[in-house]
Length: 302
Image (cartoon, rainbow, N blue to C red; front, side, top):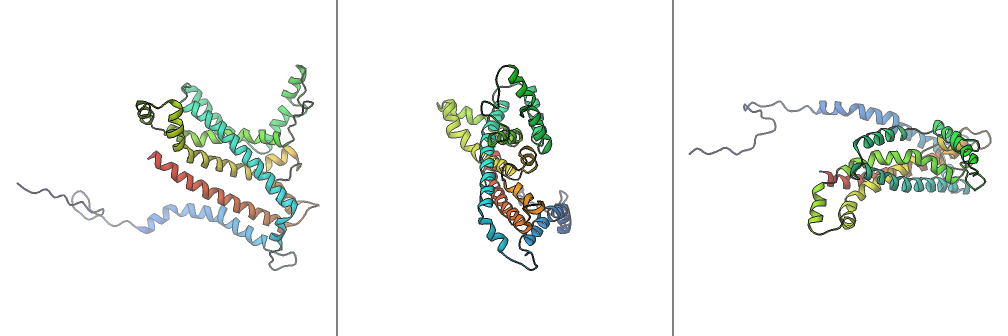
């Protein structure tokens, strides 16, 4: 009997045995060249310019005095308020968004409801800035439609302590785009839960609570935490919504940058650029943590 040749074919060898020409490394690099050009023009370049401007002195030259002013009470309070509202909306948006994604994916809701939810989430997650602030003012402002409706029913929202122009009101507005973003990002991870995992757990006598406690949640937790970090960064960098709604009533980091760079009274561009660099560092750390958690979650989806 003849022996069977089990030697694996070379990657450069075709079925007929002919040698395939080696792949061009230049062609591979040309494929990703647009990405590097885009990153350089809109990410790396502006960051380098920002870092350069944050080191400029008023009379020329370079100085670290702009960064020394970051310990100012106003700057610290602005960072604290931004972090506070970002954490609040990230946690609340993450929990509510995950529950909606669970209901849509494996909660037994109808297929049309899933389509409506995902379509609305795609639109609402990008609805922010001045239009979103104006929409909430027209509905929940002092003379808004819902406020007037409650007055007709004999209940005054603002006399009861509610106000849209407060931390609670700003959080409510931010949740309008945070929850849909959570639904869009976490839904594929929830869909990725393998049904045979639940069947195996039930065959071993596990209850529904034990399945979620020891199987589903540990698998989904990196995705949930990673998406919450994404929500944190999305809220931390918001500017137009807070400015249009509160008019600078809250000293957020993004509003402080605008006041220092283009303000008439508070005009210290160097400090504004230094505050912006601080935000870049915080966002960079958030993206790094998100990438690590995302890699961990991808192991369960293979």
